[in-house]
Image (tube, rainbow, N blue to C red; front, side, top):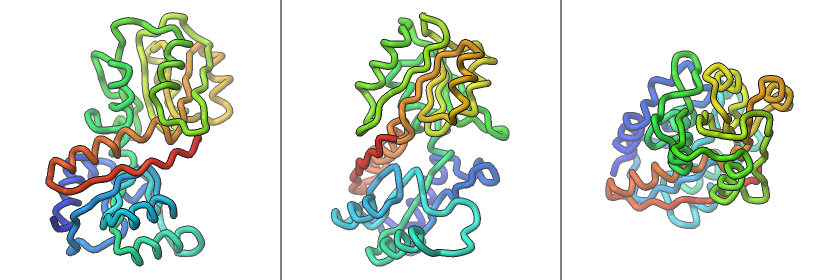
Length: 255
């Protein structure tokens, strides 16, 4: 299949255009020619020398990731950016990136995958960012205790050497849940406004401890990497149905 067709299908599936001007990531095809042909796509969360080498080793000619190389304007291509770009070009691997579009997607996205694990019902968009939503909120039929919810996520997520942290400052009975994956600490206030019982994200700035304590809100920090593998895994399954060979690359960071 031509690179151009794959890019058009992915852009349409993920509503990539909706996030232009919102996302600092340059979503879509970051490196490569639309005229190329693709028969094997590797999927990974991060663009790193390790994931590029993994993709090259298995003979992939496209790498689809959540975290790409270009963030805002690139005035210089030096250091790590140069090394990664050179490695992709040398291996003849195109790079397709989906950052916020893949966080936001209510069916294939990162928050959606986490919501599936928790069996959230009555789902609705959560985590508003400039008119779009990048997370999901919902309710569980059988409420959790904070400790049981933390334990469930610790057992289900690919945290590597990391851990799932619980800031237990709210209700002992967790039914209403809000999720923004990755570095989603800025949406704690929305969780408070919606009167949720817990806010789940990957990581938060240091102030999230005091903010959660003062607002009597439970917070679970489940790891940036661990909360953001769902999207690329889901995409790999979708693309496989297009008749293209797909491989998921796991490189947990523990962060």
